[in-house]
Image (cartoon, rainbow, N blue to C red; front, side):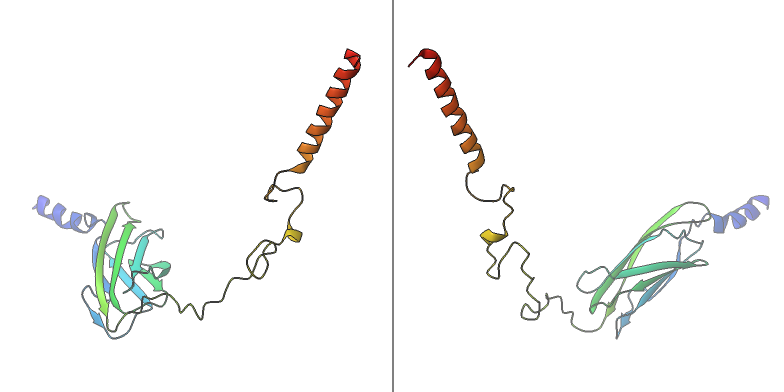
Length: 176
């Protein structure tokens, strides 16, 4: 009888923060996207849980996560219809055991996973060194930079002057 009592008492402690329920329920079909997901566990989770909720376009919608008692509340950004997937990695605040899992639900409708219309996407402004045509204007170049595109003239002038000076010195010493 003592062994049976020990097993009954050890039951919840052995659960290690296992999944109790989710909102939405695994496999549920919804008419509209949700703005949050709830994961309920057998033990209180630590606040540093890792949860990813992806929409019908496989975009991560997870925004904020907070804990109330034995529940994780995940606030979501707006998402597209289709198959939504939730994956989680949670550490129990009570015994430190890790719980991982996933579940999915569907949101009615056709997902629009296309990029925004290029005609509506504004062109980036030219930078200070670019003109309206995208070319770098010569007047905007830094004279000390190596971006001039040509050979650096200063070292050539100094090198030429040094050679002339050396030639004059050699000529004077040789008496020519």
